[in-house]
Length: 202
Image (cartoon, rainbow, N blue to C red; front, side, top):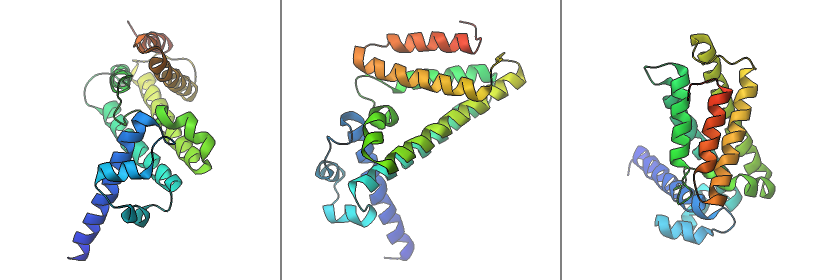
């Protein structure tokens, strides 16, 4: 096997472990899931796990880093899509948030919501990964709000950074409440508040 082929195979195995872990832990949480469950589902022997990750905590850190990298890339695509003012793109972003954060099964798409409070108390490394990732989301929101002010579609008076942080916290809280009440009413209210904060037409 050539070195490049070996590297590709190694990368594929690591990615498969991470993708499987994201799906399972996105449903059950971090502490409730053992490594054997993930490795069995991924079809990977236990010895291979420690080739890529030194511990379950190191795996959790890598899991969050991988999740936020993909999330921020998707977010960037949504906010940079051609056509329409920034106000419409932001609405599309929050609509996609609502569509992906199902209270039935988010399939790993709501990892920050599922693991946030749990792992922040378990591991400083994972808490730091969460902080970096969520800060990146807030920064992208702030840039979008600033761009909307520049194109005239978002007549917002407050600092974009403050509005972005408030919006992210609003939707994070709504995501938790959706899981508690088992309906989408918190998202409906979050969207109404979002439109009010951004001075969007209903």
